[in-house]
Length: 447
View (cartoon, rainbow, N blue to C red):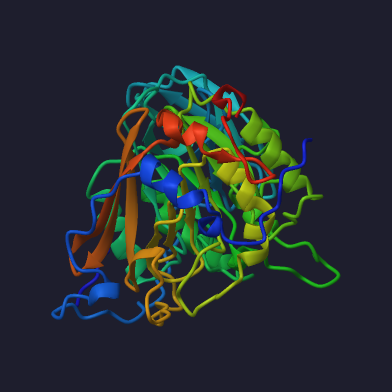
C-alpha cells in the first residue's frame, strides 16, 4: 500500500428522534428520492476483496520559507463578494496586506487587515464570481491563486470531517484534488493538534496547497477545545486565532458558529462544544438565522456540526443527543435539506432527513470499526473507511451526493444518492406538524 504525497417564538423541543414523528415518513416519501449504492454497503456485506487499511503515520510538513514569507495560507468566504486570506509568519513586523489581481504578477488592488502575534487576516473584495485571482501576502513571495465560487448553480462542495495530518490525510487531499470543486466544508477536528502548537503549524502547511486555492469553511470539533486550567479555561484559543470564519458577517457573536450564502445555498456551521440549549446565545442565533433565510434566493439549506445526532456506530454513542433534542426541531421546521457531522471515524448515511456522518478524513486515531447489529432501518449505508464526500447542487431542486472511499491510489464511489430540495416540493410545505400535532401549511417566505 502506498500513499499519495502530493501536495423569539418558542418552538416545541422534541424529546424523541424526528423519524419517530408520525408525520415524518409520509413527508420523507414525498420530499426525497434515492439512487441506492452501486456497491454493497457494509450493512449488506462489504466487498470480499476489500482490505481495510490501518491508521497512517503522522505527516509533519516542514517550514521551508524565510521568516518573513507567508506560510499556512488559506482562504475563506467572508460575506457577499468577499474572501478572507489568512496566513502565518515567523516575524512580527510583516505587514498584514494582500495584493491581488486577475493576471499573474499584476496586482491591481490591495487590502489591509490585522494580525495577532504572527497570525494575519485580510479581507479582500469585492470580487467577481467564478473568477481566478492571483495574490501575495505581506508583500512577499510566493504568489498564490484562488477561484471564487460561482454566483449561480451548479456548485460543488467537498465535505471532509476529522481530517488530521497523516498519510491517509495526504491520500484524502490528493483524491479531493483530482477533481474540481468550489468550496471545502470541514465539520470539525481539522488538525488534531491537541494543544501542540507545532502541529497546528504543520497542519497549516500541509493543507496550504489546497486551502489557498479554494475557500475552506470549518467548524470546531472536540480536538480544538484545548483548555488550560486558570490560564485559558474557555478553550479554542488556537482554533479561533488561526481559522477565523465569517461569524460577524452572519450576526453571530462567536467564531464557533456562523452561516454564509453561496450560489443558492445557505450553509450553517453549528458548534457542538459551546452552549446550545433553548436559553443559549447559539440557539437564539440559529432561530434568528433560519427565520431570515429566503428560500427563493437560497433554496438549499445545509447544516454542519461535529458530534452526530444520529449514529449506529459504537464510537461516541449518544454524544450528540442533548444537542439534537435542543435544536433538531428548529431544523425540521425550517426544512433543512442535509445535515453533515464528523467525530465518528467512519461513513454513515441515514434516511432521516438526510443525515450523513463523514468523520473519515484521515485522523491519527484510526477508524471506528464497530457498528450496532442488526442494522437499524434508518441507517441506509455505513462503512468504516477513509474517504471524502461531494455534494453537487445542480439547480434549485436537485443535488447529487457521493461518498468516495480512499481505495488505494484511486477514489472509489461507494455510495451515492440524489436529493430533492424540500423547499421545491410543495407537499413538504403542507405536511408541517403544529405543536399540537395537527398539520398546517408553512409559509416558506417566512423561513
